[in-house]
Image 1 (tube, rainbow, N blue to C red):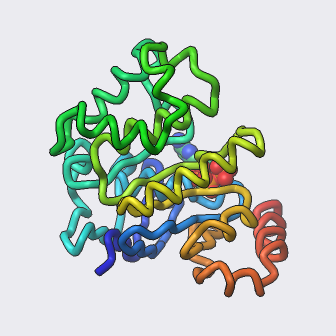
Image 2 (cartoon, rainbow, N blue to C red):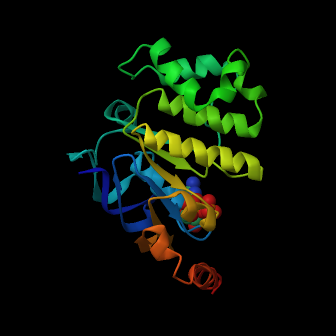
Length: 239
Ligand SMILES: Nc1ncnc2c1ncn2[C@@H]1O[C@H](COP(=O)(O)OP(=O)(O)OP(=O)(O)O)[C@@H](O)[C@H]1O
């Protein structure tokens, strides 16, 4: 059974569809990555799955239950978490307060759950009293993920968690993603660096111009001319 199954999703801003008939499936504990050229609609897709944009067509299932029309504020309780690329923490609140907010829909007490999360993000624990706005960019990204995980989601949607990070921090984030999936939360991650995505994903979807272009296991995609696909898409966008 797939944890998340998105079928033929069409969504966009206002009445303009940006993603069209996009399909994506994620199994239990899998890391599924979405790659594609700039402006392909990757972020739009995540926002639409999380109900932040109107869905014009298609269906979304979580553990076999239809959640297509479940509003965003109920999705967290249902088991879907979303971490946007920016503004993913409350800057005037401490690290620990951010995590407390994230724990409201958890079945575990804050104290029990926070220890699981400190295990995944040990760097955050010494900073627990610090205001989130004073953290480095990398630490803020971690806190965004940590806060979302406090809710014990079945699936977590991460929008470019490695954007703007140093190479060392990129590696830290990918190892955290691996740990999150090993602990049973499935991960859907948008990533700009295709090679890095192929190294750490169970399955990769390529979205071009708002539509599914291809999807396969990394070893299959490595045999394709990915640069050509991306450059071709850029040329089409310029034309
Ligand atoms: N708030 C918005 N209102 C209208 N159009 C938008 C909005 N945000 C994004 N778009 C448009 O939707 C399209 C897809 O953008 P999106 O950010 O989803 O792409 P992306 O694949 O995530 O790109 P990138 O890799 O550059 O982040 C783009 O043409 C963009 O201009």
